[in-house]
Image 1 (cartoon, rainbow, N blue to C red):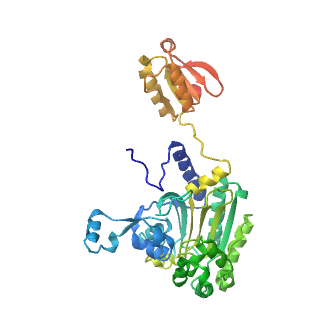
Image 2: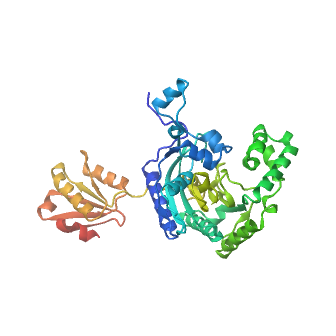
Image 3: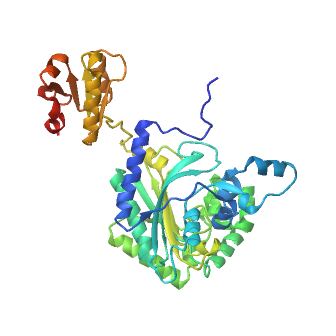
Length: 433
């Protein structure tokens, strides 16, 4: 019996893998223009990082994390023993906590220094029920700006993300940008209490999980997918009625910058995102044409207390992440699916196998000149070789025949223009390019 992939995981076949690399390169180019530089953190972190950073009451921590246990630690647990906290490891469910940990551990934002602008790309892991747009291993690109609390940082990030989506090819009319403020430690407690009291008054209409959330973190109830709960929470108190003056001014300034950039948005007072570390600005971009229930293609916000949560000095932060798989679905919905790009520019074919050494040498010359080239490595007729060249979408086919080579020549076919010419064997590179 053949071994197959576990549920919730996907192979990236060559066409999609090439598309993914182009996707990441587009992000690097656009985000790099705003001063963001790459950082790579491990895919496994100490579990406590996510418990403290994301929040124990979140679905991510309470339900969805993959915990990695070594064979030795597993035997310890089965034997009734305990393993050290540093040995409790988790596959990262998101990228922000790991980047913040790296910033703290390596002191990337010394006191009084310019903010650190960092970007990452790679796989994340969540033990969720697999469905379209929600995999157990998925790929994200994200940015983090640590060390600046100005609202211009928030606006810059929102504008940058929308420009990325635009360049990617997702039509503006196929997306909606939702924006909200979560307040801060001064004003959010009063709002949380108001929501908790509201939920207590409607407890009989809420699911058991939301009633549990009311005691731990009532704002999580805004994320509930239960239709009855959503109806109740639609009428809950709005955070914008509880913002302190500083948060209200910060939020207004962010919106003013976004307005000045000509980007449209919808204010959504119920938008809280799914993680506990957010303060003040939160935002989310949703695909309108997606057939998937998971229509959020990107989002993020400000997290001014997260650095302290993981043991660093007080440092404001802002970031966002976007999902590759969900962007791919949004592009397909817009009629811009993944295409199989050509992998070969010049294919070298031979009339018979005795000319393979010369073909091999020409292929190496072309590659040394920076040209994507390939040849036949099997026993194929010339006709079969030409079919292979078509399959590889080769722009040119160089046909080596004994008579032409004896005269130092090679026949070159233009597979797009459907023309044919003879060029000197020693000058193929310069003759074609």
